[in-house]
Image 1 (cartoon, one colour):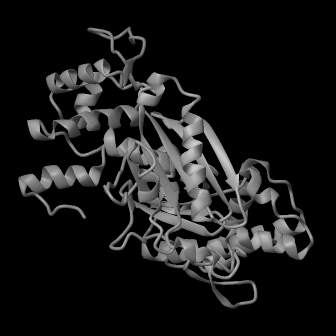
Image 2 (image 1 turned 45 degrees about the vertical axis):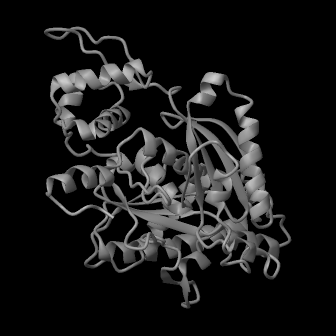
Image 3 (image 1 turned 180 degrees about the vertical axis):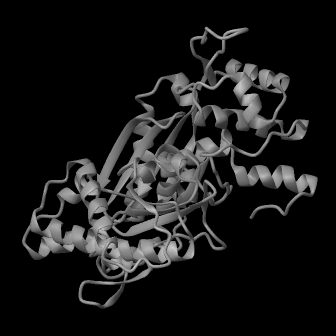
Length: 420
């Protein structure tokens, strides 16, 4: 859930570490409610006393807020914990059914639509494959798909829907040749406002974010992010993308493209300088399969159900790993990340092989002067982009956005400039 730079209604989330201290002013009470909800999300089973300690709010303020959140069914009580001096401690949890959200992932070979609950569990999903993305087809998939999923919900579930979050590559018309689109076919995306088109057809707020940034945010919240305050993230999709997390916050930079990863220059096995995306992307494996007369379509049906393609897959993993190793060292020479996290649109066994091969390749490089990060597998998996998208409406309405909180509270108090 904790994503950065939501376009049109922007918000930047950082939910994996303790949020900023609470403020008791009436005008920011909504943020105190979000602060409490965010701590309960991060520490499910936390007590009111612990919430007061974590937030810096008074015990009375926390008690009032949590009673209101319980009344609104956003929080539910666990069984009291006895055996200590004084009153038994009552663990509090987010109510999974309280909030639902649609998440959309648009890729260059496939699209996904999910319905996610308040604690990040995917309830329903739809999948679409195509040779290349077409705006009209994507729009119909999103709008009709949401309509179909809604029919499977009760009236109370439909009333719990917070919105729609779309995770999509920016400038989809680029790289048309690499995905095999006909000349000019991808130009239809130029000037097409997907967010506005979806919003005009649905009764929900719609949010849009870069797909790799969404995946990074999902890893920050639902994956291994809570263990690492700073990490560089690689998501190997049709085209590789990524993100940067600093101080448990997705960092998007001045233009929103920080951590794009794909354009990073690396050397291929022939010693030629290429962009990372030209080596460590699934479209490269697709090309290897075609060259050997192997049908590549199973790559796009379901990321969990890849078969072992044998030699082409072995070659691709080896080449990807060598390129990723260079990218990790380059990133670590700028910032001493505590981890480099690798995930992608493939099954766990492929991810495990790729990470192991990357660690092996790093051992071949000159690491003098480099603070070596942990190189680990991501935990969210192939649906990371859709999960990140679904998080956007939930954070916009219910959970803490640390940058916005600083902007509202600290700017009002004159302590620091507002975040952009």
